[in-house]
Structures are given as C-alpha cells and as structure tokens.
Length: 335
Image (tube, rainbow, N blue to C red; front, side):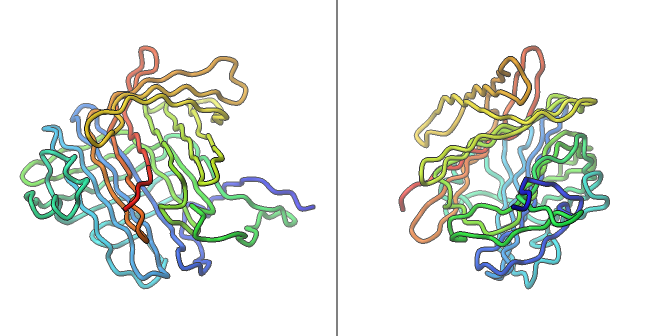
C-alpha cells in the first residue's frame, strides 16, 4: 500500500486547483493584535468559485471597545487569487512574508452583540471608512497540510472520497505571525505592530458540516505561541489538535485538548476559558486561562440551519506570561 500521511508543502501557501465540487472553498484568514495600542482584528476571504462569490469578512476591535465589522459576498469568476470586496492577500514569499490590505467601509458597533441580528445591526449603526496595509511575517514554521500519498519522490493528493456536503476542508495550515503597518478607522490612525496567527484551507466546505468546534489562537511573544482546537462531528466523533511553537525548538503537536468554558449573557457566549492540552513528548499538561475582552457573534445561514461563529478577542495567561488571540466558537442552531 502507498504511504499516506499529512504533509505540508511550500506550494500549499499558494492557491490550489479548483477540484470542481459545488461547495469548493479556498480561504485565507489572518488575525492580529497590538497589545500597546489595544487594537486588533481579523480578516478572511473564502473563495467559492463554483458558486460565483467570495465570503469577505473584516473585523476590527478598536481601543474604545467599538468593533468595526463588514461582511460581503463579492462576485468572483475563478480561484486565481484572494482579492475581492476591497480585501486583498498577497504571498510575497511562502511561509515567510505576506501582504494583506483592506480599503472599504465598516459598520461601527458600540454594542457588537447586536450583530446576532445582522440585518438590524447593519441598518441601525453608523459606518466609517477603514483601511489597513500590513506586512505579515511568519514567526514560526507552518503547521498542518493535507493527507497525501507517496509517489516516487513526490507527495500527491488522493481523490476526495465521501459526500462533499459533509466535509470541512481537504487541507489546512496555520502559522504564527507578526503584522506591521498602518490601520485607519475614521479619523483615527494607528501605527500597527502586533502578533497573530493565519490559516489557509482548501477543499469542499459548508459551515454546517461539524456539530461544533472551539478554536483558540494565542501569542505570548514573538518566540512563544500556539493553537488548540476541538472539532466534534455530526456522528459525535471528537477531533482534538493544535500546536505549541517555541523559538529554537521543534513545533510540538497537541494530541489531547480539554476546554472548560464559562458562558455569559442571553446569547450564552463564551467569556472565561481554561484550556488544558497535552503535547507529544510532553510529560506534564499545559494549562492556559483566557478572558474574552471583546466579543462579536457572527452568523451563517444555509438550508434552514443557522450557524453561529462567535469571535472573542481574548487575553490569555500561561503562568506569568500574558498573551492575546482569538477564541472562535462555532455552534449550530435550528432556524
């Protein structure tokens, strides 16, 4: 039998061939937080070339606790690039240097919890012009890849099996990063210098495929960060994962994750988090606690199902180390 394993290739940081499924998706995502400015956010473009549009999301957490948000489905004709709706991602050198930029308007929310009803929130809140231009540098090796089989000296992608509507990405990578540049919101301008994490996924995807997931990203300094996640599928199977990256050491894979959450408010959104994870080769568990400092609940609808993706900018503590990142919780609800 051919050797099969998850392999990450340099070419995975570039665009992938459209494999033709109606729900083929290729998405890139970047988050970033400047702890001195107390400002940050995330940006995502998910190309759906066989449905003719991209999912474009930009979210900015402003120091005065306002959240700027914009979502669009701009038309696209192919999967050649991540460039739609005023948002653009460029790979200057794979896994080393990217450029990300946005120029457009944003809905400015004094109470970001209003985005639970997006139609009402977009109508009842003011708008402002916003832009950012960041150079985004990798601070640790890329992690992840795609299940591939060995063919001579090469690793090739086997044909996708199963129902595409039940899949959530054929391949996926993540990498810690450092964003430097300029952020403008209305009349305010920030010289931005912050840490973050990016991801890149390709293959069939519906947001409704998993039962739920928790995805926790964190940067403590340029030499220490990581990610911990748990995905629970519709059949009840649980898939933990993640990594811890320390400068000068091999990336440690997370093999087991336990997440304890305190929820708050009428929407039952995550507020306080304790994550315990065990790494390959690590004798003792790692315990990290988090407190959400700004929250916005987002929504995706398809075929009578509502998927909530709650995005909490979070302050993390690991012993005496303080870090920041996003705690993203996906849950499914009936219409």
